[in-house]
Image 1 (cartoon, one colour):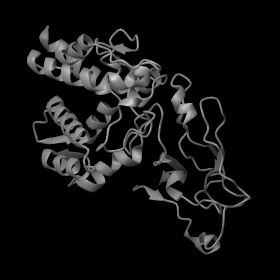
Image 2 (cartoon, rainbow, N blue to C red):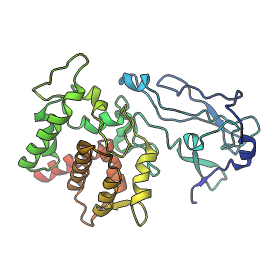
Image 3 (cartoon, rainbow, N blue to C red):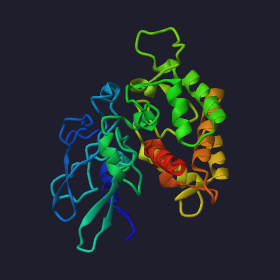
Image 4 (cartoon, helix red, strand yellow):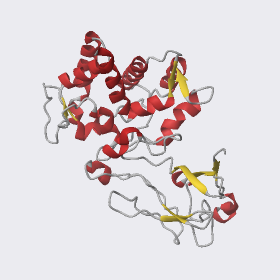
Length: 317
């Protein structure tokens, strides 16, 4: 059946002109080792809270700068979705479907809250589960996963030769791989330098533990400033700009999307966004002229890179 959202509009009158509630104050978002809250399902059974991480100890900045997360535990006697203290419903949204036995099953909850380790979407709420990818990479933020393919020896450093070899494995010509490598390592090396190192690294190494420092303007906001993945922003690319069934997007629609993200006077951001989406189009090269939604999602978490490389290596044998 079609997904439905539980309604809490019956409490609108009680929320009017009310200040912060002392009954259920907002709590610090759970991190790697903290227990998640409990909410009650319509069938009376308890269900655990968010089953994704917002911070990981391997990337300290995610623990130092936690995203907003809203306590969504139901008050006694109230069904899920009806919380007197719930001020921002989207921050604690639960989307459900009705199953054949009358039970409610999660599709996606807390859609506006950033995920530290999974690139979640409406269709893939647990991220990339193929080959246990999300579980195997849970020690990395999604942005670190995005670049991990190019760090073939997993030493946390991406040299220009690593970038070049990565693009060659993805099927790019030597000339295009060289040009892309020069651009990427020249631009993105300096912001990732270890703390205290002020002079440029003329080996143009990119340090993956500080890859969140490479976030630029005119982007979609899918990655936050700590390298987490925000499903809401990913979904909005398709809800706002894609036609048809919202499961793919054309070159013209992407161009319109990139134009709409422009920030005043941010020339570097304009160029970076344009080049990134051009590279995405070149990598996917859709024969029908439509990039698939899940392929784009899997580029964000890097899982598609390994699949394309394996496919190319198989062809070359």
